[in-house]
Each structure stands twice: as structure tokens, then as C-alpha cells.
Image (cartoon, rainbow, N blue to C red; front, side, top):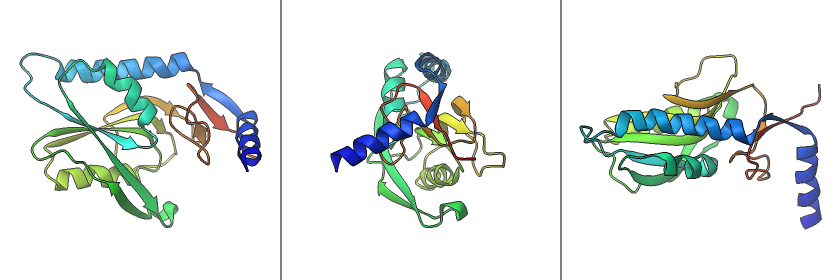
Length: 189
């Protein structure tokens, strides 16, 4: 069984091309941190934002962004999944809700990718329904899918082509979340 997974993972990467290297990825996260610091890191700002990482794809992005934030914050995480017909939205199921109180707070949601946008639109609305004063969506990658999405991110690290990608927390069949750059899986024409 281990041979199957090892060979499948290797084959995926052999049929992929690097579209963003580690230096580009790191620079985009540093730029995002700077944008957040400009808003929240000043003595007159009394906001104490709640930062929510969306598990499991955002774990790498979150782990690299948080140490670059220079303002007081509280960190928690959420875990949501979509089930059913994903082309028609499917059903969003919350596996883990925020343990921290969101009422009256600015909530910064960190996610790996904005694809169709259905899941993040649901997350944003649910947090507002729970009483958040503001929800800021910060996504590492915004996929250019060629059509309108139900939600627009407030901060974007990089815009990626409409291709299936792995690396920097994103996976294919559980493989290659650990790549430091982004790789697009080649598809058969």
C-alpha cells in the first residue's frame, strides 16, 4: 500500500510544472502581512482582531503569515467542508466552529485558495450572523476561474491560473501540501 501512495505522489509531481517558486510565495505572504500591519499595528488602534485559519489547507500559509504580524491578536481555527455536488455549491458542513467569541470583533479569515468562492462566502456570512463586526478574507491564492464569485477577498497573495495546483498547503489526494512553491498539475488535452 505504501508503494502505491509513494508512486502515485511521485507521478503527480512528475506531471506538474512549477508556476510560483518559493521566493515568489514568500514575498506575497510578506506583502500581505505588511498590509495587515499597516491597518492594525498602531497605538491608536484598539482593535483586537480574531484571526481564524481554515484547516487544513491554510495551515502552511497561516504558519508563515502569523509570525510576521506585529499587532496584538487572538488566534483560533475553523474547519469546514463542502459535500454533495460541488459544481452547484454542495452543502457546507462545519467540522470545527470558532471557540473564541466573535461578537463585535474584527475577524480575519486566512484560507489557502479562493476557488469557486462558495465555501468562503458561507464562512463570511456565518461569522457575520454570529455577530462579527467585520470579516476580512485573506487568501493566499485567488484562482482566476473566468466568472464572478459570490465573495471577493480583501487581501490576496497571488492570483493563479484556472488549473489544479498543489503545494503551500494545497494538495492532490493528500499529497504535496509540503511543497514550498506552487505546482500546476498537467492535464491531458
